Picture 1 (tube, rainbow, N blue to C red):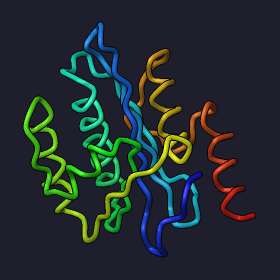
Picture 2: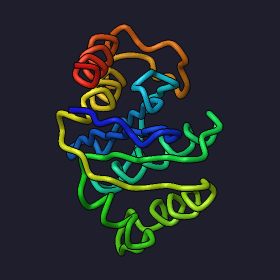
Picture 3: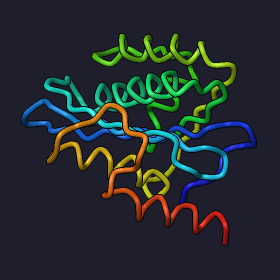
Amino acid sequence: GWTRPPLGFVKLNVDASFDQDMLRGTTGAVLRDDKGRFIVGGNWKMDWCADVLTAEAMALRFGLLLAQKAGSNRLVVNSDNMEVIDTMKNGGHIAGAAAAVFDDCYFMACDFTLVRFEHCNRKANKVAHEITRVAKFSETRDWFEEPLNDIVNFLIDDVTIITN
């Protein structure tokens, strides 16, 4: 499941969904402190998106913006998409539709005091995944300081796992 970031770091989990037929997607992000406490979350609908990697890159950019607005400076970023993590570890360099978005992400990441990109499995990313899923069916909110009812149980599960 979710792993605690080092002391003084916040953890950003990001996720995206992509509809191949409609060329649309949704993104979700959640920021938690080093004890697993919810700081802020958000989700967003993309009216048009070229491909799944671009959707995942947009989710990362959305999450980095959230972390910036929240005043974070030491960040561990988790995505369950290995290509996103590898691209960011490689300076954001990639060809294709997602190139410009990864470029943005790389320069945004440089604004943080310290940022680490780590791949996580789907289970560890379930809160971001759920926030993303909810965006398909309801009004999106690019900033919420109280966790959505849909994710409270997932947050509790994660923290319970950590404290046991």
